[in-house]
Amino acid sequence: EVQLVESGGGLVQPGGSLRLSCAASGFTFSSYWMSWVRQAPGKGLEWVANIKQDGSDKYYVDSVKGRFTISRDNAKNSLFLQMNSLTGEDTAVYYCAVLPCCSPTQWGVAYWGQGTLVTVSS
Amino acid sequence: DIQMTQSPSSLSASVGDRVTITCRASQGISNHLAWFQQKPGKAPKSLIYAASSLQSGVPSKFSGSGSGTDFTLTISSLQPEDFATYYCQQYNSYPITFGQGTRLEIK
Image 1 (spheres, rainbow over the protein chains, first blue to last red):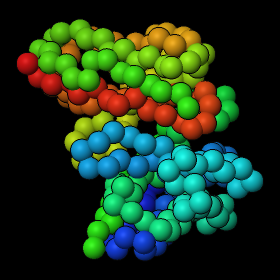
Image 2 (image 1 turned 180 degrees about the vertical axis):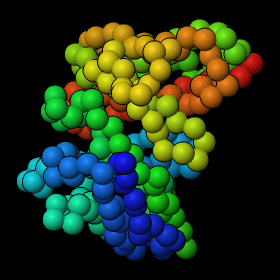
Image 3 (image 1 turned 30 degrees about the vertical axis):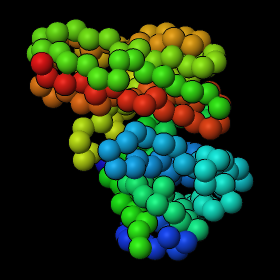
């Protein structure tokens, strides 16, 4: 059974930092591009970042460039998101996901975690 | 950036109805489009990829079509469990973008 389990969310003050983790199991983690997707309360889905199988390529939505860093540890089947200089606009549920994207071998794949809530507030 | 616009934003329908949701891309994306279903408090669930291919385990009542800039998701014979919010997602180019969502409600 495929599982993506996020952790590390919580309440943080504006300007603070947080590191999210995602533990993957049930599939060959090192074979897929991995993603972070977020959803602000009552809002739609927003893609945040992607990382290639070997970590050599990374992409970010403009609003987080220079503040967030995506990384992975294939030996531990883990995905991370380091978030710095957080603002209220970063308040959201953050999902770890394997999205349909990036190469034809991944178009038919879609796995999602249950999400972890990040609240940025003083 | 490629903007994805869904219509309608909300839709009321009855059990047994057939409904169609439209997703329009601001520029051509070939068939690099996926559809997701999301229920309150839950993670999205994949329905369709490559515009018209059904994800494994998804019932055939769901179908997708389109290419280029205009896409549709059709759900036939609505059942209570189908009432949810639906999103399209393009993966033709970065940044990956989602439509704003279509909320399907029971009439």
